[in-house]
Amino acid sequence: MSTAAELLDQGHEVDIYEARPFIGGKVASFQDKDGNHIEMGLHVFFGCYNNLFRLMNKSGAVNNLLRKEHTHVFINKGGVTGELDFRFITGAPFHGLKAFFTTNQLSPVDKAFNALALATSPVVRALVDPEGAFQDIRDLDKVSFSEWFTSHGGTRESIKRMWDPVAYALGFIDCDNISARCMLTIFAFFATKTEASVLRMLCGSPDRFLAGPIAKYITDRGGRFHVRQPCQEVLYSTAADGSTVVTGLRMKQAGGKEQIVTADAYVAALDVPGAKRLVPGEWRERWAQFADIYQLEGVPVITVQLRYDGWVTEMNDIELSRQLARAAGLDNLLYSPDADFSCFADLALTSPDDYYKEGQGSLMQVVITPADPYMPLTNEAIVAKMNDQVMDLFPSARGLNLLWHSVVKINQSLYREAPGLDQFRPDQQTPVPNFFLAGSYTKQDYIDSMEGATLSGRRAAARICEAGEAISRLSAAQRQAAPATAA
Image (cartoon, rainbow, N blue to C red):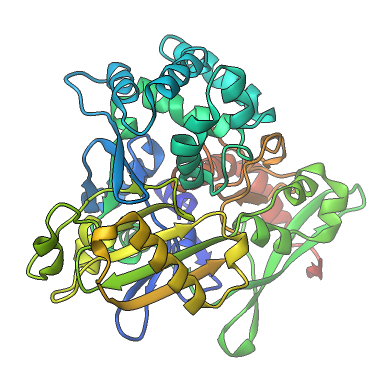
């Protein structure tokens, strides 16, 4: 949708084909038969999501964001809370210094060594030379965050109690397995932009309050959506000189009917497994850019929703936690080092328009990462384990009844941002002149995220516009060419 909005703004015609019955990609949501909104993940908007906010401003969706208190809250076993509290009389970088020096999530010794590591990081250079700092950060892609952090004096306890939950929230893998580039990219934004560490969440479901307004922006400008129409095959022709162009897409419509779709330019806006399925095998053999995609893999993730008959995160007032006249508890994103879900929130508090229900309590949405051990389990077994872990974090909630639940398993979600893999992320422009890539896994300076996806879409649109004259010539030539052959 990011690509579509950009191209429509430039006066192009755009058709979007979606295999599922709903749009939105990784931020999609849908309603079940009982009207419950089911999400694919927990969606949090950092203040440094500049490209996404630009798109949301254009579509009006930015008005659907609810700003949370400028503090990152950790819930430890037994209901013990820790904080990175960025609220301060002044902004970056001093608010960050205040947050790290005053946090109660780490011991004084761990805080001291944490400060040493960050003080010797490229984050300091970012304060005076952002471009140079980000190049230094890109160069650190070859090592894990743990390797970098401990080599600069940081402690394993800091990783366990603070940075692992953050890494899981960002990339669904821990500090031993995530690239230093990913973590330091976020740190650099936090250090240089006061708003970067501010968290926002939608006032309701992504379908209504994010994808919906963006889709309306697209259709109001002539864009067209075609759902339940998966692409079965890329059709292309190869000339005697080896040059290759896409000549169409074989689409499967409802009822099994096939259709060949033709256009001047084609954008594969997919995740990693989708790109692997769609790209023709011959292209992988011919061009390293397509072969490199097979060096990437997605991380399994499970999103679980748990509805209770009281307020789980209200730990200070038992009577308040048991009443259902009004919502009570922690209205923010929460992290934990002591559960198999690293980040979670009570959506009835954070996103009340769709998730608060009269006469019912908390809707805890937890994200299991890494989800590998849980993927073979039944939904009922997963729910039982998550409920137990919620009660371990919030002992005051014991005695509340679980009223409803949902489980969404995704075998491959974000691409695994392990050390050394950034080099394999493909550019949006490909060796096939009328075929382009988009998706948060493609080459861009941010991590795999909503912001990364939006940025990749803008880059894909820019590549198409830059190649406009060449694409027009190809289209004219194709109208005189022989029929397409299957890949």
